[in-house]
Amino acid sequence: MHLPLAELPPHLQWRLRSWQADAEENLGHPQEAAHLYAEAAHHAQGLHRAVMLQEQAALLLQLGQAEAAVQALDQARPLYTGRDPEEALNQATWHYLYAQAQLHLGRPEEALRSIREADRLEREHGDPSYGVALVWGQVMTHLGQQEEALRHFERALSLAGEADRSYAQHELGVALLDLDRPLEARERLEAVLADPDYPYRPEVLADVAECDYRLGRLQEAQMAAEQALAQGAVIPASMVLGNVAFDYYHLDEALDHYERVVREAAAGSRDWITGHQMAADVMAQQGFRDPAAAYAHAQQALEYTPESDDWYSTLSDHLKKAEALMGERSGRMLN
Image (cartoon, rainbow, N blue to C red; front, side):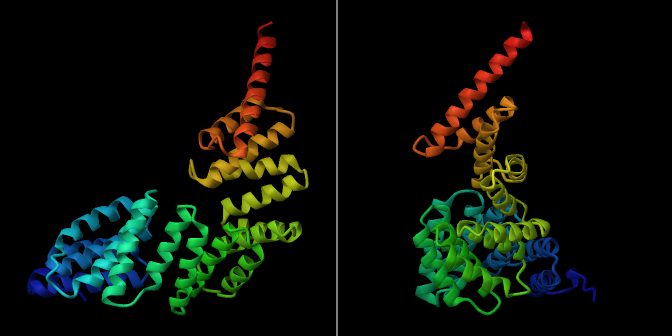
C-alpha cells in the first residue's frame, strides 16, 4: 500500500520508513532496508533518530560496509543527552555496534574499549546479552588472547537463544582450535553441523577438517576439506588440503592449494601470510625450479613475519638461495 509521506504527520513519517525498513530486512533485502532506515533517521528527532541510525549501521555492518557504519554511528552519538532514562540500553547498543565496526577496520584495541562500555551499560541498566559476549570474544581472539576469548564465547553460549546457539558454538569451536584442543573443538563443531539452517556450514566443515588434520586423521581431513571447498569455503579448505598434500609429500598438489589461498585471501591476513610461507617452503623442497616465484613468496611472507618467529630465518634462507639462483641464471643468459 502506497502512503505519500507528505500526507502524514511528522511523528508518523519516520515510523512509516522504519516499518518499511523492518519489512525489507525480514524479506532479506538489507541494502534496501539500510536506505529506508537512513530516511527514517532523516525524519526522526532525538533518541528515535539515534536508534534509526544504529539500525542503519547494523545493516551496513552486515553488508561489510564498516566505514559507512562508523559514519552513521558518529551521527547518532551526539543525540544522547543523558537526560532520558531510556538512553542507557540504546547507548549500550551503540557501543556494541561501534566495537564491531572497529574490529572490521582492524582496530581491536578501540573495539575492546567500546565492548567493555557496552557490557557495563547492560549490567547497570539491564541484563548481559549474548551479542555483547560474542563480540567481546571476537575482540579477544583478534588480540591473540585465546583463553580470555574462550571464556566470553562460553558466556555467549549460556546467554544465547535457540536461533543464536549455533553461532556461539561455532565461535567456541574455533577458539578451542586456536588453543590446539582439536578434540573438544570437533565436538562443538559437530553440534553446529547438526543445525541444517546454519548459514556457515561450509566454513564449519573446513574447521572440522582442520580438527581431523591436527588429530592425524589425514583421510578424514581431506574428505571434509574437499566437501568444504566444493561448498565455497575456499580459503580454509585449501589450507587443509595443502597441509594434507604436503604431509603426503605431494608437493605439486600442495603448491596448487597454497597458491589458491594466496590468491583468495586478503593481503596481510593470517591465511595469506601462511599461504606465502608454505608456498615458499614447498618451492624450496622442489629445488627452486622457479626461483623468481619462490623469491616472491618468501619476500611477501617476510614483510609480515616478525624476527622472533621461527619462520623468519627459514624464509630468509629461501630468499637468499632463490636470489642466488636468479643471479646465476641471469649470468648464463648474458654469456
